[in-house]
Amino acid sequence: MVKSLGVVNPLPTVTVFSPAKINLWLAVTGRRADGYHDLVSVVAPLEFGDQLIAGVQGNGRRAKDQFTLECDDPEVPVDGSNLVLKAAAAFVGATGWKAAVAFRLTKRIPLGAGFGGGSSNGAAALRALNQLSGAGLDRATLTALAAQVGSDCPLFLPGGPVVMRGRGEQVEPLPAAAAARLRGRRVLLFKPNFSVRTAWAYERLAAGAPAGYLPVAEAERRLAAWIAGEAGAGELLFNNLEPVVFRKFIALPALLERLRTRFGLAPRMSGSGSACFALLPDGAPVEEITGSIREAWGPWCFVQSTAIA
Ligand code: C5P
Image (cartoon, rainbow, N blue to C red; front, top):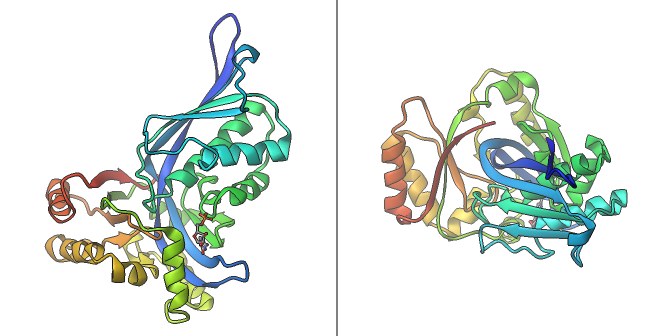
């Protein structure tokens, strides 16, 4: 929503929620000529996430840069490498909008996780600027801009569970009946205190090709069967990046196995990791599960209970 701050010289500001995501289903189907990989993925935004505030700056406060970014987390780069500023540059490239804007990011999604935090922030910046400027870019144009910012940016624009294809630039909302089987499902997110570089994970998969890829026809057949059926979220879970990542980062499969045997959960890695998640059945002992995760990965590791938005 666009609000005005100040009485004398009201300057518009918008606040947008920037959700984390999980890949409930991630099939990497092959390598493309441009070096990226083709995917078929079901991705769901979560109720847990960051907050981005974008405020137009008056002429008197105009800085040398058109866009500035502050973040409460000192680990987050606030230079041009941040996807908020990349998205802002892409927006100006498309619209020619001239106003100066200060962004303030409140960060809760862990970095380098596979929860899509940076990509979500980039998509949030596009939505914020589209509102602030009144440019009214349509979804297709915003999606094309988001794809320039990062492969995982477009998936955040529809605001619900999506099917993502190509390298991430083809996004469509999951059909309503299938989305209803996901929405509101409780999820536990957890991440060890190390990250997995996305490019590394894809390179490892490509090095073992074609064994690690799921052929696209098979991926589409399995996904269509889940969409047309009545099975719940638990029947969808799949990620063929797991084997390559698990081979090196053995703390991941060791804990997931423990959660399977102790609590009957079906935990998964999200994206290229190191983030993991587990759907929580009703009455799941969240505190005990959290204790088990912290016992394995250390008391400071990230654990967060949330739900599919
Ligand atoms: O586009 P983004 O910067 O998020 O991707 C990070 C890296 O992950 C890429 O440089 C590429 O190596 C790999 N990647 C890929 N196929 C995708 C998405 C990412 O190979 N669909």
